[in-house]
Length: 324
Image (cartoon, rainbow, N blue to C red; front, side, top):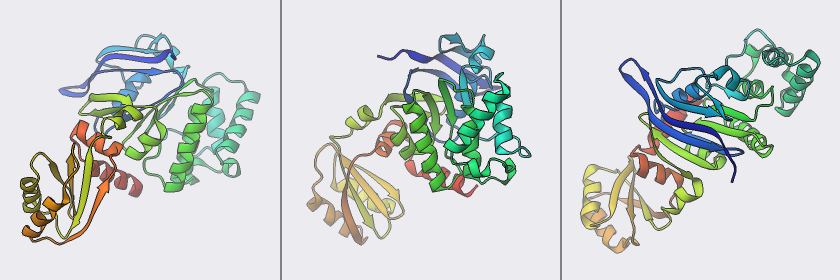
């Protein structure tokens, strides 16, 4: 069993009367990808800011690679790489210049930092644009260069805050590949995201966080295992009215019935759902049924069940990020 390289106990962060993070405790093992999954405002960025020294916690303890992350934050910052949700690189400097400048902050000699910068530009498919100013980069290119800057000193632990928010699909795919490659090379990664599919693809373990609290931490496999015995049927109808949901609930005692969106209703049960009982209820409600399909439980279903937050709220945030 790998040792814990991040240990957080009872972390709380207040901003005046607002409690942004409340009594968070989490540990991350060496070599794993650990993710915080939650909506905007859940406390993800505040937690990472506390762990990386960008914000001082109100209370609680932090240990990074055995070092006190509150009292010895300068020492910790030399051990970790940080990729914030928004880039702090210099717009007027080229990609190459930004990387060599970041390397100089860690005391890396000129020959080594220049070699390292060229290697990273090549690795991140930015070699052809390394001489261009950062301000001329696309959003996806900026994100990749920001990650390159975060690992210029070869840290063993990397913090990624919303690594693919607001960028195009192809750049997102490339960044997910980079995260996998870094992890396979031995880098421990702590990332935050509000993309359910990203957490499922990348993370060994996931912490569901909402309202500044951790609601559940477990491996993806164990999270999914609990829902394998659940039966879900999704109906596509003319209009998913409250009356329709109520009619279905009455026809299916003991079955959880919920509106998914304006045209879909979902029925969930621990027993197989008898469609013979469902169709008359739909007919009585006066709504046409276009499709009834069995749905395999997903991490999205687990997230909704544990947090009570509708997954479409995360989808809406995702779409806003894409348009930003």
